[in-house]
Image (tube, rainbow, N blue to C red; front, side, top):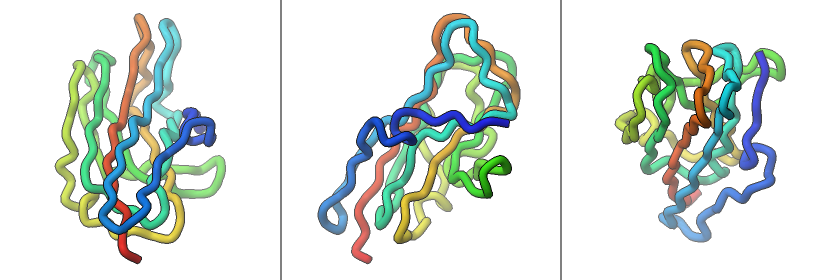
Length: 148
């Protein structure tokens, strides 16, 4: 297993933060499986993070068709280096076999309280995905600054 970091996870692209309670921000966190490359089921894609003192207010998982019966889990990354796991707070076994834009419908994710640290967001596939043509997976995340 390896953790693959996007530009947002590495800090090479900015993740906006709200300035006042209720200030809503949106970020598009994307990962591209290049033509002919394989994203292994054992790999974790670290998309970016939910900033400290912010709560999720919406999300959309936008994907190109990966084929087969492939699904994706999207949630917070937990665990020690080398043994990280991706949660299912946002999406659990969400089909990414056909091209789609799937709105977040997890009451659990929308009720998560803010915390005082950034929380890493990851994506993990149920099976290996080999791209014929570039294939893009994007999490469009909406979040609001909290009052604490």
